[in-house]
Image 1 (cartoon, rainbow, N blue to C red):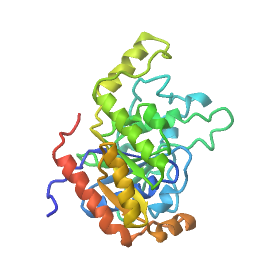
Image 2: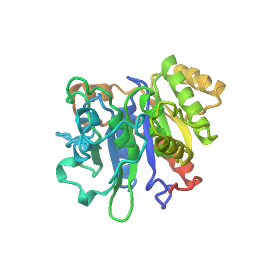
Image 3: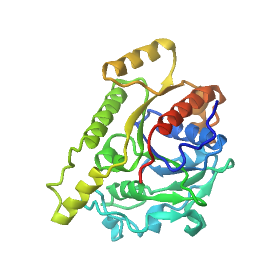
Image 4: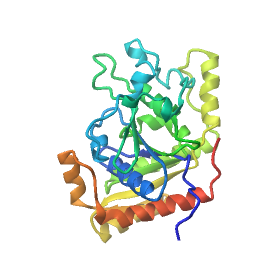
Length: 303
């Protein structure tokens, strides 16, 4: 029986994975399923290089990036700094959607709220560091009505944003794993990082220029809200591959919370730039949301 209480309301779930793992697909499928269950859902595109997430949600046009709203990158004379060099909070990052100019967000047909942190492809030569995009993803909180929605943040492929501390701002780091050794290793590294943060291991600060910045960096990690690293297996073709990958995680003390099986219609949607609609894996995604709700039901909401 599905829970009447919306236990994922207000939670922030960071979606991570190596390039090609299918993290953006997982973000879309989870958002669609959560919306069907009656949640208010916000998807934040924090992938600074990958394009097309808005189309996968059925939107014809991407919104103006939040990077513009917050004044642009420091590397181009703007106000948004890199969290590695400047860990201080982003001013004005908690925003009611009614306060946002309408060009800064879109709503899908089913009502999913979509925002984009920013892309680096249009920033010009010498502005290729996407730290400011990660900073926006770390700090932005969107409010709807009296509550915050469940927010899914699609991070840049790889480990960069995790190392920048973005993982400290999410309730769970959800790692999407395709059947490759590199993906398995990345999930294991994420688990190790989350365990270290929870154990109080301090961040690297020797590069910071003032004692005040060191204090901020340490505070952010000390007050981290991340509860756990969770794993989803994706693009699984058959039972043999599923057993092999699951066994690899068992050796590392990790149990995937679900499996999304291979569905060729998903690849065609991304190729054509159309809405991802994959009824063949709907049961897979429903099961994953069940597990997320079960985890959330036993985990206090962080301030």
